Image 1 (cartoon, helix red, strand yellow):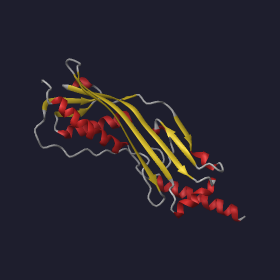
Image 2 (cartoon, helix red, strand yellow):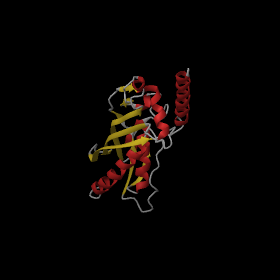
Image 3 (tube, one colour):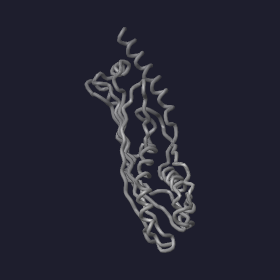
Image 4 (tube, rainbow, N blue to C red):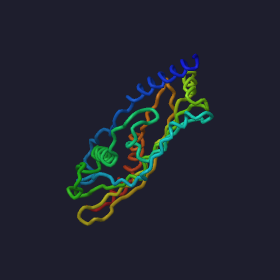
Length: 233
């Protein structure tokens, strides 16, 4: 009887924890750097079109494996994480990477002071130049730790052991193209990753793609400026 009560108590605690975690990072957000106050580097407009999705269409959701005795954790190995309803620390995440990344890139470039104007559009020929790209990876790797104790493992979370570990990988390739000549003016390929450990008293987000995109843009902007320094209008 005591064991049944303990199991019920643990189940209620896990439902409570999952419900509380589902409010974390409820939607995609991206904050660009403040707008530059200087005159544009080149007097041309730039159109940014939705990125092409080149991700592998494969998701493995093995979270329930933690229920098997002597299994140290359950895990998720997701290539398109936005298509899965439940994640290690949160629920469904409204995310449209082909558009969301492109709009964030357009905003960052518009604030950079490189171009006269930067805008997101489905028709790239609307600008003097256009930026296109491919999403190579939005890999999500997550583990929920139960320390070989099956459904009783979460008890250890309350004494300070980690609950979960999450890693995101973002891979993008970008090309800047002259709309008139179709010449590739600049291109770059980038991959960034970041991992976080969660405790029930210090939960971390499942999704870090905004941070990874920010790191990519910090690397891409100097390269782009250097290339355009010798660009003939």
